[in-house]
Amino acid sequence: MDLCITRKSARKALGKDALQDGINEYLAIACQLIHEKYVLGDESEWDAYMGVLPEVEEVNPTFTWKDEDLAFLDGSPVVAATRSLQMKLRREYDALLGGQDGLIAKFPDRFPAEHFTYENWVWAFTMLFSRAIRLRNLQVGERLAMVPYADLINHSAFSGAFIDARESGDWLFKNGEEEVILYADRGYRQMEQVYISYGQKSNAELLLLYGFALERNPYNSVDVTVSIAPRTAALAAANEGIEVDPLAQEKVEFLASVGRDQTVDFPCYADRYPVEMLEFLRLMMMTPEDTRGKPLADFDYSQDDANIIKDKALFRLLSYNQRMAVRHRRNEKRLLKRTLAALEKQIRNKGLDVDDLARAEGSTLGKVLRGEKTKEKTAIEKRLEDMGLPVDLR
Image 1 (cartoon, rainbow, N blue to C red):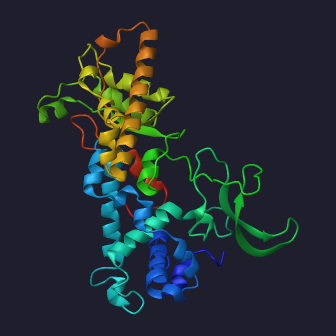
Image 2 (image 1 turned 60 degrees about the horizontal axis):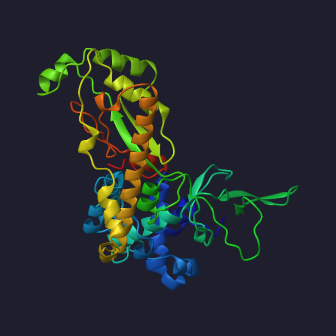
């Protein structure tokens, strides 16, 4: 464990008066990464490890993309999450290091301004997001760590191998120290590459944090946000164009009774969708009289991106980031299109006419129905918070 870079090692290297007890793990480790690579350089005990860590351009997560590349992801929830993460990193840098009360001003000898730049801060977080490992079986509880060389192992969504900590020693006698170990999921031949799983992550999460997406990803999904707007008489009076729903209050009370919010994110996969989503939509659209919604034919789900990819000459003109963005957006549209097809098939099996049914509104961007405020976070942003990232993304 002494070889790992953790919050404990960061406070030891940079001073407990600077990095105080309780500082977020990501922030502390980011400071030590900058310290070891840019301040100490070849004098660092981690110099060899720093030498193999890639540059930002080699990892290429979307929060480091240029605006013209991000524009190719328009319509994907990755854009909102990327913007949130960019703003968050800037706020964290300004709050911890910049300004009159920042560590650069307070401890200029330990946090030299020429090295603790925002560019190096982005590099440190690129390393953290794509390489840090959460060790869950430590004696003191789980901790975030940069584990030299173990983070070189590539990701496979189909691997069951993982990295964790354990008490060192043999099966009978333990010496009280701890070590990091790779638990293999099967026997491996000599020289065979070992993969681990970075977790059950969608391509949106992989693209945002790791800079790549997979064509074959069993966990790839698009989160559709569905909301029941309480179209009460008061709401309709305050918002022109909204009709009163006689069942509005009853719907809200029912959702509360079953422990559901009015706004719910449903992940849609290539081969399945949540049955609960259909139930939620049915409740959402229940009215005393049938209503007419926006026809499905008004929306184009996948044709544009698919044609761009088929036009090989045009596709080659795009940058690497833009090609990856177009592929990702096309795959998200495919997931949505398959979900719609499955839903329509189920509706027809019930003996209903799909064309005559009202359409519920949904969004992959965290938006809700008219009469409600915009949803504050997309589902992918919520999952980032669950990772333990410091402070609110927005």
